[in-house]
Length: 440
Ligand code: 5AD
Ligand code: SF4
Image 1 (cartoon, rainbow, N blue to C red):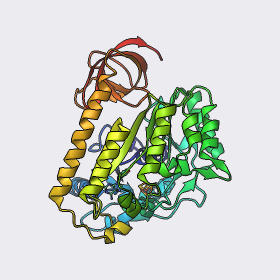
Image 2: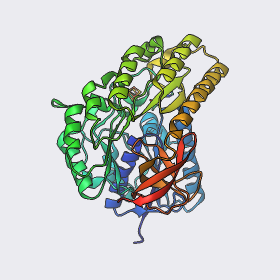
Image 3: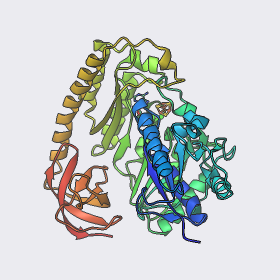
Image 4: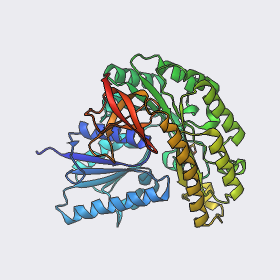
């Protein structure tokens, strides 16, 4: 029998990236090997995101392209779909015009092995949507990781916060916490095999609680494992961030980086979003970070155009952006998602107004960014290589401990290498550098 190959296309958040590595592990255990491209693979799996409508449209049109392509060819290739769009649209995805051969639910990733067996037996249009297990966990050995130095480790899955704009609680289900022993064991086995950059994952990591083991307790246990050079966690919910977590981040191996999504700076909108904090409470947490971690990067997410957002609400957001001096902002235009509470709110903000506000937010942040990154020029920083630059094709790129991208157009480096770099230039979002020493 000729060897069968697979290719996974991953969209969306870090949780999806990890789910793809879990899916890859099962494919490899079933005898599949990684193809060079989706076009040449026998099995193509789309791992999808539905957090905004655009992402969902992209996923479904890509699915149609792949399945149409198969129909036009020998029909040998299998196309499946997983992730949030799979969970949202379910059996519809096996019907025209999508025609996926299997649909894997977002809490059913470990059922891929069973799906592969059913495919081998000739079954098509398979739905595997129900949960894989009531108390969720996974074994470290079942993950096929592409990167040999950086790893995502899930500590929880799902979310029970029900922010009124967000589809995640519907497509990923309520929060389930992973056993602390499994997390610690996985991190230990990763560091034993050379991993130095660990990122703990959860939709709201600070809500972690397993039989009385809190997030801070878990951090203590993970941080005491030798060999970690950078320990990060995403995403932090501002309502659940406590001072003990911030105090703990002062010492190694914690990386000087935190993602603290603001969403809006208006108390009225934060209330409508069901975020569970006020602008004052948010700013208090920012002040902890600035006090205890003065050099750390604070990244945030901001949404523009939530239903009923007034000019005054938006001004409140801009004011927080000015005060907090974020190092990085991911900004989004509000997108109505089915089943969410906000979908029933009347939105009377015209599109042109939303677009103009979005531009104003970007302009404000742009200057912040440039000023912040300029300060790195001339400094020596430690960079962990994680790939090649998108703009400067072929040039290695990596991340500083603050998670800032550095492009190294004059050097040759391998993914996973840790190098010392002198920063020679700064752009809007990225730095430019030259390797001065190989560390690891
Ligand atoms: N519309 C726009 N942005 C959204 N996000 C979540 N839901 C929506 C939505 N319906 C953004 C939030 C979140 C980030 C991951 O995506 O800012 O923090
Ligand atoms: Fe969505 Fe809110 Fe949960 Fe984040 S915390 S995943 S925004 S519901």
